[in-house]
Length: 243
Length: 380
Image 1 (cartoon, one colour):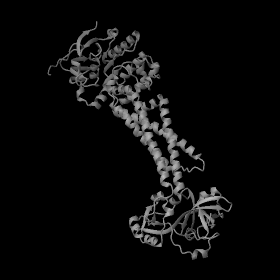
Image 2 (cartoon, helix red, strand yellow):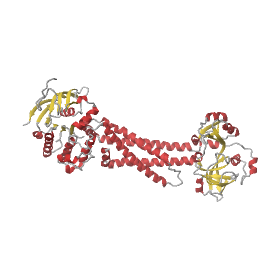
Image 3 (cartoon, helix red, strand yellow):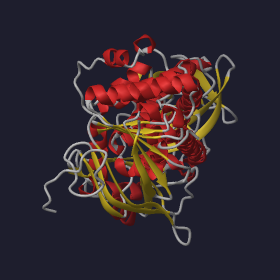
Image 4 (cartoon, each protein chain N blue to C red):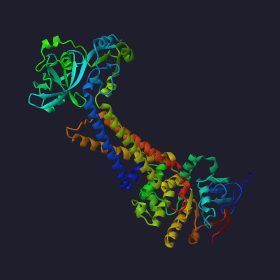
């Protein structure tokens, strides 16, 4: 491609991948084996720019999770390219993909998915150690930014669903990743907690220039998103800006 | 080990249960090892202490109880003396005897007839050496049975009287019976069946025309390698190295094989139990490991962490078990053949930890097969 024009965030679904944030181009992926193959991604192209908070909605089995897996270097599409911060993920082997995820991609999972044995502060310390981060790393300051400093010494079992999700968000930010992939963050939360958590995600992406892609069922929280994309049967069918 | 240590603390209940099993296995290991060493000492310490390279039995002697069954003569002895690499060779007589001390106490003795002043004469912790026709040097463990220097023991039935003139250095037993060393001539007199009641006299001995003994004890020159087969061909004997000859002492093979079998089973149980525990533990952590892998933890890190956890558990609780086993062993009654020796306990400890680690490793390797994709979606 010689076309030098970058697709404008939120509008372009074709052309040259941008050098920051996330770019997916013509991703195709089939799941299953033998006679029961399902097309999870059907020629999907998507961009998420730094500082943009993007939501992907759609019915179960529409390919949302596959999109997240492909964007997060957890799965490789059968064809098409995925570029994160200018790095073509298909160029990386399994070990390098793990290292790339560690320093460039933050994951926020359903109900936090924290390690049961670790306190809130230790959840963050572990990621910092995995990434070979600075010895001076201060988990309390990061917990403070998600309003959880007072729970630093508590294990997940002692935290509420919303608190767990906040710690999960702090954990995803430890390495300063500029792409945040969020999987159904409000699945286990009531309305008020859901709004708080998503508001926190929106604030983090805007303040720190993080490209955030959130898969959700929860239409209540879409008001906090910059853009909402809908998936049906492995295709992106709508990309309407949220008012 | 950041995660490993915190998980050990977090799941301390489960890990203590597993640790308890490991510790009990270690206790059992120490006890078995002590019992095994004790039985070996009881069985063959009299042989072990001898500066002997090999024993030559008469050809065709049945292996079990070969020491007291074999008969060799002077021709076989001189044939062995001519074998290359032999520093010394002596006849040795072995026989069992029931006896009564002068205080009326019944004792059992293994009579080792050796040439006084030869390399076979035992080192003593007390008393004088062999020489008098009726002088015997008895295992120091016989003191517990009331035998003392100067005690006269009378052999049952034939009535020959022998006097204790010395004690060996340390335990010298054979076939669970205390050894009494006596001059070969006296042994031959007793073995010939012509011994009269009372103290064996010099006249009796010189009149005796009985020159056979049980085995030829061979000592190799320092550094020389004995060609046992060549010696056997020349002398018409079948020889065994010192440690191989242990099998020829009464009950030795049966005892050690039984204990070895129990120990082998224990090692296998240890490896399997630890493997089973870490298999269940790893499956329980499946989701958490998927999350860690999704975040970007390397497989190597997770494997190292899992193995470190197993190692801490195994080393910690094995040490605890060995300590408890040593404490228990020290409290064993004297009647039980029990000897705590550093080398076999070290081997048992190493094997317990090593095999446990192998079991854990087989289980922990599952970590590398857990797909990070499992982190997406709900917690199952």
